Image 1: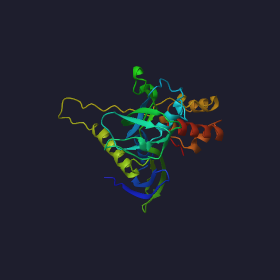
Image 2 (image 1 turned 120 degrees about the vertical axis):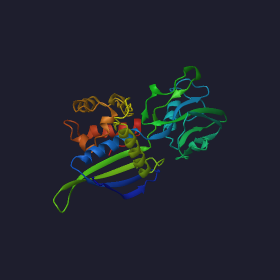
Image 3 (image 1 turned 90 degrees about the horizontal axis):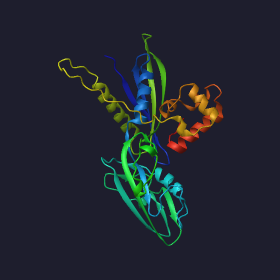
Image 4 (image 1 turned 180 degrees about the vertical axis):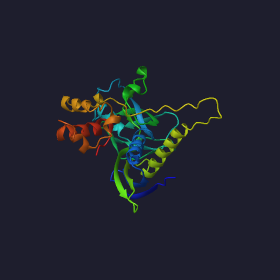
Length: 305
């Protein structure tokens, strides 16, 4: 039986709490590096649970383009700031948090009082400034899920004036892999898979890799056929949370058409490319690559390297 060897090469943390680890998997057969690397990357980016704010209600506000007298930021800016709050921990059911502010006061993530199973990763994250003596009430809906959820799938209840927020649940920020050939004494060629995982700090890269491996074990375990049973075992449906059309990025016509020509139609397709690979697409170039990187970071908080 083929024996694999997995080792952690290096780990480090950024100033904003992100954690990165590099792993090396040895002893792979020809072609297995690409298969395992691509599969793990997809699972890491789309199948791990995280927690995010999915909707907000501000007293006296009924649309995201409104302004609030006495508050420095408009409603849209407040929603964007709420989207960037990071949580550690999971909740089985959605829950609501009410924040009551008496101005003048600077509002940060630390003003959110959370249940015991959830904690803040960036409590100093800025939300808004109430510059006058006034009361401001915010109600937040927080839930746990996987991948990325666009607004039209979020909580809807128009009579309650909740404003939906694009929600990025995945704790994994970026995944890169590289495949190398390894020559043994008997001249048999094997492959080495170098894997780099960056998380937002709610999970360590090692925990993320373990959870992804467990997901795949469960998935492929269901494909084992037990002929002693007459009823077939249903195979769980594989969903892709990043199957969001690239139209959501609102790219320039040139960049959009170049991506379409190479059959990049969703974010799941796009994140499989590095910046270097994007620049190699015919007529794409550095300017279009920069545009894609900026749009992914701004709209979906995804970093493409």
